[in-house]
Length: 336
Image (tube, rainbow, N blue to C red):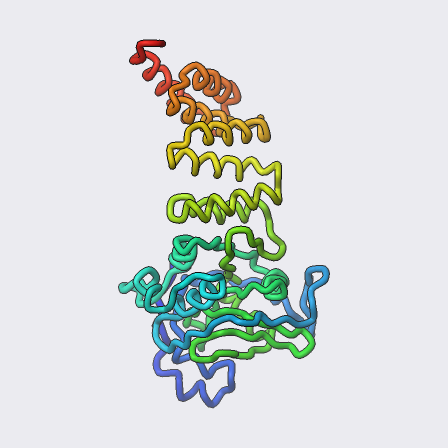
């Protein structure tokens, strides 16, 4: 997602804000972080969470989340350092700033937060815009990076980390700016989070899964890691396949990684596995043809691409180009 930079503050609000209570004390110190997104209806009303997930505890707190105070434009690096350190990554704010601060915007983009998480070998899983899902992740021991829209009239964009909630006492606890444990009412928090489109994510070690995980959503979070953290991506795909044995998307991901390291035999095996698991799609067969071509098996490559072309979806032009490559290779091969 695109975004405005941290430091996009309303004119000199600090003295006014300090007279208005805890929720606004931090306005001057919070950096802006994102493009305005339409907010949704309240998800907490009359002292109760609307549509709570089954089994959600009344309160939860994630212990051991580091804290990096910041009162500049580095709300993004500070928040990300907190969750990455919690997830076992050796990093800090200064090391993350060059990856995250966009000088022209004087702040951090959501896309860069996800990218830096992936480069660190962690799965950046964007949760659904749901208080219930957010709280469920906290209850499962996952701190959640959130985007808030703060200030008067709401033109300050800020990253923070949710580390706790208490439904009975109507509170959400965040690592935020210079506050190790900023406490907001659930309604206050939800209003600021809704202003940021209720955008948030968790940083997961390979093998960890978020609360209320959706298989395709998880695998889409792993896929960008193939080029920037291939070992972590491979482990994440393997663990996903152990959890969802019929996941042809995980099989394809493992095939892509094997192909990238020129292990064409393993790549072909994974693509063939995906083709069996998802026979109505030509993509696994096309990739199988490419792997067999790279391995020098022209006959097998022809057979695979012919099946892909016969299926014809979803990428018929790609399959046609693969067939042309195979035929060109065959024409130049003495043993055609």
